[in-house]
Image 1: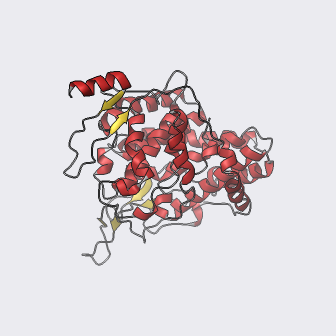
Image 2 (image 1 turned 135 degrees about the horizontal axis):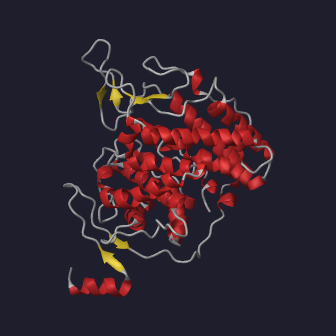
Length: 407
């Protein structure tokens, strides 16, 4: 670093970041602003922006039949009717054996014939309950609460139709494993359900017994995540899977009031995710090394920012948490923003899947725009598609009703 650069840092608060080599095609160096969060000046009325979209989805949800995974059973599942089951995305029948076992891996290539019905149940439940919760938040009409309670009761509480609070059989690989820790990412979408419940729980149409039962389900599921062998493997993964794991723990523990778990979530963010997964240009090297580096980088950033949104308080401010070398979540936003604004600038090869459908209306832009008082983030958020139809993109965006998350 020369004298002029040092003077610029001291004068303007801007750091010229030197990035270690990630690969031969590493992402170029970026000039990253390391400004602290300022008192809020920008504002945005998410409820007003999404008003028509919310009511359209919620009114459709009013006509929905109850959702339960017990309607669908996979032939390879070693669990019971109430146990969630899915297959690893990138695993395919073995072409060298008569029965296709054991499955073989093709990274980045999703097998369209995998059992996916339980995932679809989770997505449908989340989409509809979130829409109902959002509709109640902006209208205070109890009809949305009554429908949400019905859906929640069938999926989580009724002994005959509930999903058991574990993912022991998630992302199984036929002929290899009955279920793996990586499968815990399959419940990432239900992080929006506690937020929807919180928006509705004070309504007279939300029975206290149902609320208690739902809190118990999420507490039991969190306990399984934190004590099971599969959970331990996922909690300590070195990439986006660990971030998605702890985002779930954060939301579920916030909902159930488990302060011990919340403290551990903050510790993971400060001691593991920022220092060990983010490099000093704001990128995430393990996501860049994949066959879908653009989509994975967006996914990782959304979930890191969501952790800040959930876990930051007056005494625990993850938005401004910064390592001695300057790494922080603002740096990660500054790294990715230009490529969200103009995908043609992305310096790596296009993703092998869903390239044309990224980006959508990423929640990181909204949350960070408000936290960092950055109008450009909010302007881009408003312009992007809030309801992508590509399944690969949809399954990688867990937050679909941001009105439930803004504080």
